[in-house]
Length: 185
Image 1 (cartoon, helix red, strand yellow):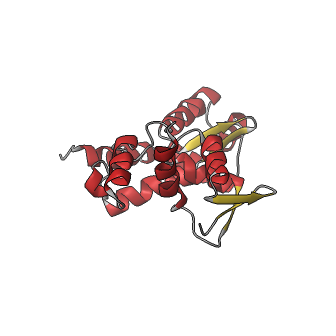
Image 2 (spheres, helix red, strand yellow):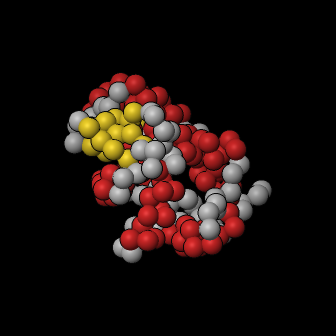
Image 3 (cartoon, helix red, strand yellow):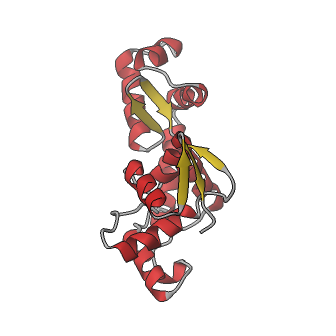
C-alpha cells in the first residue's frame, strides 16, 4: 500500500468517513447545527458514543464545536475532498508558488506541507505577501457572509478573526454589516 505523505490525508479522510455512524453525523450536520444530545437521539446512539465520533470528526477538521452544538466545517470538508479527488500535492517549495523570488520564498516558508499557515508574520512586508495569497481565495465582485469568510480562512489558519482584520486593514477586502468582498486593489 502506498503511504507517501500526500496520500496520508486521503487515507485519513476515507478512514474517518468510512465509519457509517460518522458519515451519518456528517449528513445530519450538513443540514443544520445540532447539540450532542440531538445527534445521539436522532441516530439512536449513546451520548458517549456520539461524542467519540464527534471528537474524531473535530480532530480531522470536518466538524466545529460551537456554543450551541456542532456544525459541519464546510470549508475544510471542501478543501479535503478537492485535495483527495484531484490528488494535488501541497505547495511547499518556492518554485511551487507564483510571484517574485521574495514572495515565493515567503509563501514556502510560512505554509506547511499540509497547506496550513504555520504562523501569521509580524513583519509587514511578509504579512502582505501572505494576505495577498489568501485574498486570491475570494472571487472579485462576490459577497461573502462572515461565516463563509471564516470557513475559507480556516483552511489556512485557525485565527480567522486576525486574518479578516488584517485583510480589511490592508485594503485587500472590504466589509459592511458582516458582509465581506475582495477589493480590486
